[in-house]
Image (cartoon, rainbow, N blue to C red; front, side):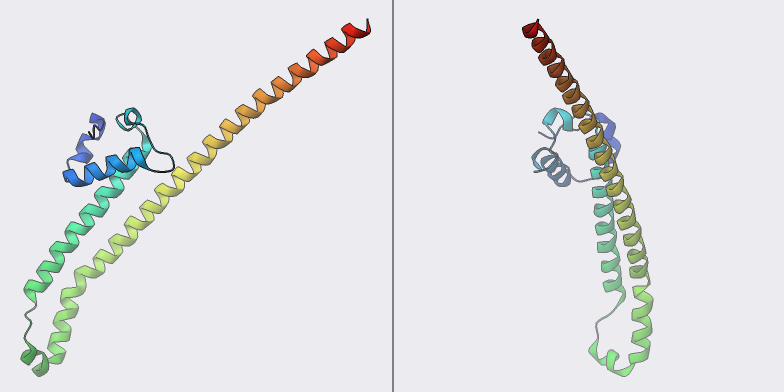
Length: 160
């Protein structure tokens, strides 16, 4: 079913099968700019961007789960000790939350990279659309000129 090009094999190794299947289905069934199965099986910039974004999300989620588990393992839930030593527990909680602040920074970096990639795709789309419209405009102008020439020849032939 999902038959990605071998060019993406290194990226695909980083994802579980369920996410690979989800990406494939999104590529071939999205409402705007969907790809045919043949296009999705070839090398395409949208595919690479989507895979990289999904790997970033998957890695971030996996790391967050690991950190959350380690924070919970390190912090003992003991109501009596929380009442006896509130300042100590606050300091310990702040220490344990240190990695969470790094997650926020990496999340900001990921969001910035996604924004850059989105803007680049948007710019490529605009350029491609402009080129297509210019090409169509030139074709239509040539057709109009030919029609004008044909009409003027027809007019001159009926007058003569």
